Length: 339
Image 1: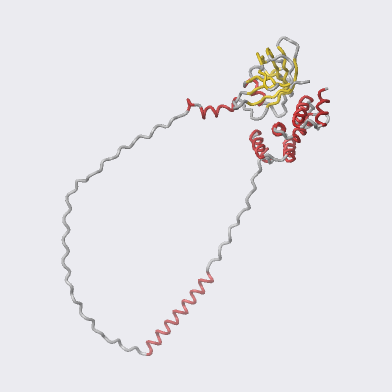
Image 2: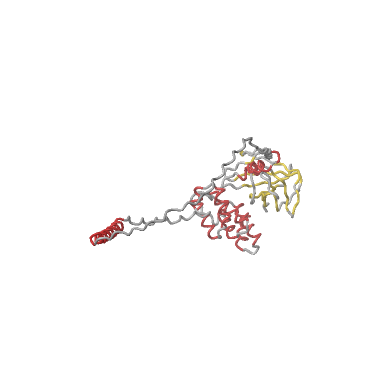
């Protein structure tokens, strides 16, 4: 039976560092070595994050036994190339005893939260104590002494002269002259003319007043694109879109539609990452759909999933059985793919 190999993040997570967890290994724990081969060109991972057509063996002096599994830490030489692989990349690992014939194979799958070593640059520059710049204390400004102006003494203001009340002469009343009837009639006519002029001016102003400006037209708000929209898929970097879509947490049926859109638009990395994230998170509907992408019985060849891969399909059927041991179809397909 093939081994099951997971590449998992450390706790706490460290960029460029991970742990390789091997299950179902029946050999020794000491003096082991492993090689990693990618499916797209059958090249083998080398010691300096390079790929070549000749096998290279990473030697491990001793694996640690943890919960019926073997673990060993790995660094950027292993982690970075696996994270930087294209959306179509799968990786097969062979584990063997050094100098002996006992060996076994399996599919190694990167887990959630893994970070390449390049992700640590910003963290170190932010938190490294040697790079922190302590702001200099602001210089104290001394208090200035109060300024005393040496001015000549002010001249005394002259005292106001005493006010002497004077008696104004009493007004002499002069009777107004009597107006004639002609003067009275003229005044009435002048008042009437003034009233008519005022009315005419009011009418003219009313008719010549500008019409009120039309109310401004307010454009209807444009709906913002949702995190999982195809528009974002075409405009954003792959990892940015995947992280936003995962955070939005669409329902399983909706996520399958998004994955189909990614496949149709040849965003194979997006489809792979969304499949793997939700399947590893326990969504068995997504895990089953992902297994069928590699299962020769169900595969419909596409740009993103061009040919069957029995080992990868078996891996995801086994994942389903880990959550649903009574799943008859997953059990049947897993057993047939092992033959």
